[in-house]
Image (cartoon, rainbow, N blue to C red):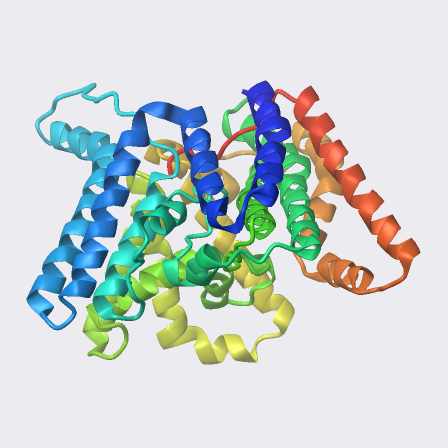
Length: 468
């Protein structure tokens, strides 16, 4: 798998970039479509007909909604056809086993499972198509009149694995007029390298520690060891997810597309409310605009508002994976957000910034335990161990060994979780001196080759978002 990933990186993407830049303006979307289809075929070719069929249906429904702009019932019908088709595909591939398994459990039937393979990026692709249908229905955007352009939008490969969720209105102009410059190529490649470094040099390294601790292969457990483990996973999931987003945004920039930002240093937050303004921004915005506000948002009674929050966050959790721990994870945040809004807001504002940050990160780290363990017994056991309720020693030789071994990378990960380095990079890149430009270019190339060397030599390169 590592070899195939490197092969894809070194041959497919550079070749596609060269072909894209030399292609005439009218053929650039065709190059993207072919490249995207090759990407999906590389992952799982059997799902290409489903993607192709859905794109045709969504395009036709969009055109029909535009045609019947003054007929609300017709418009709603075509919107529902598009939305329900995409939801149907998502539910079938992602949640069939969950529903079948829970239904069977009600009747005492064991070991019931259907062998359904999850298509690459089905959650992101479905949400993008749904947002397009609803936006056209609402009239907040016009339908795309060219199927050729719509197919390019719905199959854009850079972000389909781990986001961001790209709405049609975000790239509508880019589909017609690709602004390709040496600056966009340079900025895009630099952003891609930053994302690759986050994933390979930080996420993979701390992830190996978490894998050993969570699987019980790190030696005798202790309270400190459990906290080291969840600290590692806290960094892993951020640098992995934001790294993929950076790579997607960077690649999109190379191809002349501008995607929305997906992360804004969430670990500097001083409340859970702020955390969710900074974490997976496009997903939060999607649920806000297409679920929360249609349900009534906060413009309703207090009871209904609380219900709206619980529904939205339960769905947000369930979107992440077909398991009850994800629903619990979503409801966990719903309860905290409700408490912050109605009880803690004024109290938190009076606390020193440092204490607010400690409060936020403590709750976030607990949330990642819930997020990771699908087995409720393992989840409970880990939480009990973290808080010293399992008669474990506070520290032991294994914990001290891992603390000393990973202490430096933890410090670096904490530093890179803040905007400090970005400010330095921005100041450096804004300097017009030739020597500075050469230095930064060399630095980026060294980081890139360090990532490649790590990928070649490492056997640990997990993909956290296979469930998406």
